[in-house]
Length: 253
Ligand code: TMP
Image (cartoon, rainbow, N blue to C red; front, side, top):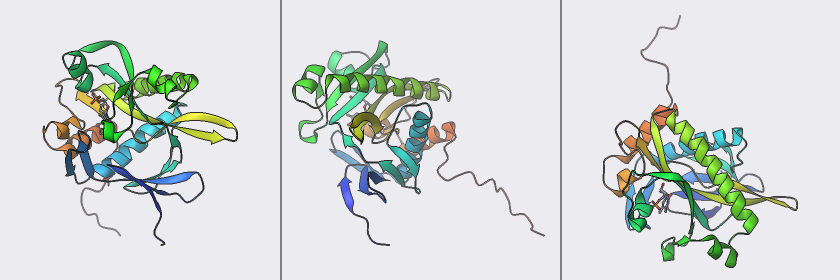
């Protein structure tokens, strides 16, 4: 097979040209980074888990009418996605204080927030993805007022969907980050959820024990990251190895 053309390589994923115009192949690497890639490791199996988990979340979102870039999974590490023009913002939704909001505002980690808080960070590694306000976003033309309204509404719908899904398997959705892209159907532009949704981009705490089941395990050296992600996948019924159903050899007559 002819080698596909690489379109983009990020810290955890690679994008290749897709089989048809307007599509891309998204490949999930085993690389983990934190603190703007100051900390790096390769975690065997992480890419396979995130490919499956992102498929699971995006398929569910598509099914309830929240548009995403996901078309279908191709294999263990790759999925076919719609090509989008990524808006250069990380959209974070927080239900419980943790991470940077706790640091910035002095709120103890684990404090429930009075309502979900939506934040925007400018995607720029050199600047360390700074927090920005709606004023900055509109003044600098990264998104319009209409885009902002649509992004907040998408982010809150994703929050409700993921929170409910996680609650059902004994996990608290503390916060998460999504990226949003533009697609055009003729002259009509709309925004859809893009990139990935996985434990790399969420904070997930076990409801009973508070145990962390997300990338903080890597950021804070709390144990084995692949084990934590496997636990999330197992609870959600997403099994990367696939339950074979075969427990012992059987005679075939
Ligand atoms: P923060 O508390 O560090 O701002 O992170 C908020 C959420 O966003 C958390 O679920 C982790 C996720 N996140 C990313 O996916 N990528 C990033 O680069 C950062 C800083 C956070």
